[in-house]
Image (cartoon, rainbow, N blue to C red; front, side):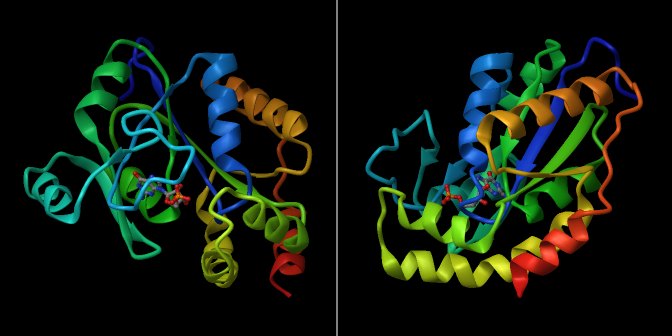
Length: 210
Ligand code: 5GP
């Protein structure tokens, strides 16, 4: 049972390029949520800093951390390992601070299965259209066509996981999506009824994958 003094875990997942990382940074800046910094074996992108965006590590070190039981969750995504170390997250939550996670559906499922004592709110972020997704992926610093194509292919598979999340939000206008997430977090944290409805999501997903 979560104590009212404990912090809340807020997860944002999405197919790559839906704008989730921007939302996570905005939520952290405006709402003071701590971002959980993951470990990854992926190489840093041009604008990324070790210890700020990720803890960049090699596969050997990552596997050592797995063997030591350091991870709350970990997964292989696009041929690289990504994982969340438990101790820093736990210490924030125990102090009553909220922690936000930018992780994929595999990690979300692992965290849900662990049934920790902390309150957990999960969001799945969708792009408004496949065209916008392609544009967003192509505009990233990496500008690597092979990666963009690989991630577009993954999209149709990844998007199907929306059903395992508390809320699905469409990131068309960043500010609107941010406000929607904030309002849903507020309702869920305070156990107030919200007016969220997922009835239109299935239709939106079908449009995205055809
Ligand atoms: P990127 O390489 O674009 O930064 O991230 C690729 C994917 O890995 C994204 O969907 C991101 O949410 C996910 N990811 C980042 N960190 C973690 C993590 O610690 N665990 C899991 N399971 N996924 C992560």
